Image (tube, rainbow, N blue to C red; front, side, top):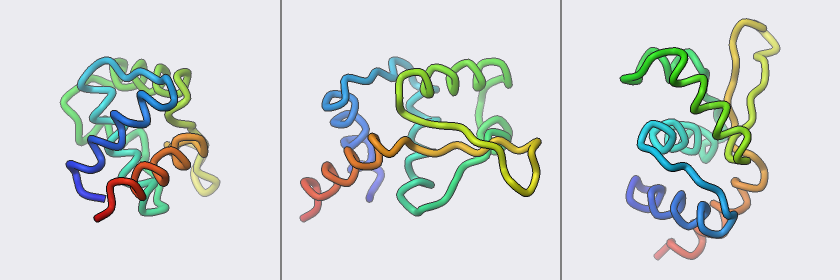
Length: 105
């Protein structure tokens, strides 16, 4: 999925699922997690904090909001419990799959 299609898919999923990501940091985080999810990979919280332009508390607050809004889930890395992994929810994955099918040429 291209960046343009990903942005369109997030907006469409937002509308379809009635979810809200009101600010840029939340959308940046979500795009990163979605890109990894579409590749069947996970994102580490530490990667977002290290690579982002925000503080640890701000990122954690945005992650909490994205989780509460149904966009992402968090889990412990089974190999290292200090590492928190981020995943898109099954509901969002299904929405993106439907949207990706519509956006495909």
